[in-house]
Image (cartoon, rainbow, N blue to C red; front, top):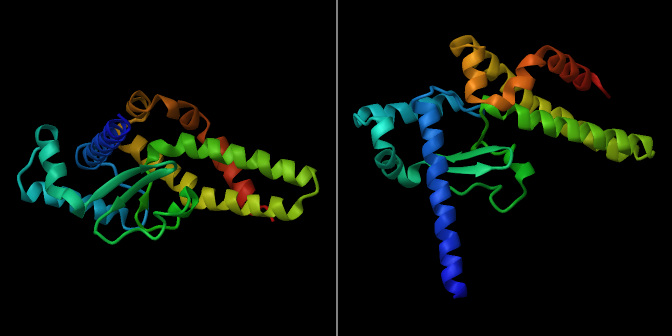
Length: 202
């Protein structure tokens, strides 16, 4: 009974991984989204080339594409983004925290994650303010560094890619596809000013 439950859970996780992997492949090959990260454009180009060389249709042959890529392209969902590995070499951060994923060359984000990044930004601001008000200046300084890292690695690149997506497909299209981004889009100028202020803090 316990073994059966474990096997079912593992099977469900694997199915979720496959579904998520197929979603990301579609976003890159059909929606023409570029992953934000080290060599994101090259990754996108290589996936499209792989599909075109085999004359596959992403809309019809997604399962076949995912199977053909196999272990040459491993895609996994992470709390703050996506892990996309293009070889069998294990990630150094696999056994570490999600915070370390940001330092991994296999870690990517997409523009539609900007709302999550902004929420994390607000949470870190509160922690920074609490530490400062309680006289924990060293802890506050660490939070400030986390804030700057988040802004540099996640939120700013996501906003930049969001701007490009709006320029390509229009604001209405982006909001219809990603309703949670409306508040970010409507307040982007203020968010950009907020980012600039925090990046200047010492």
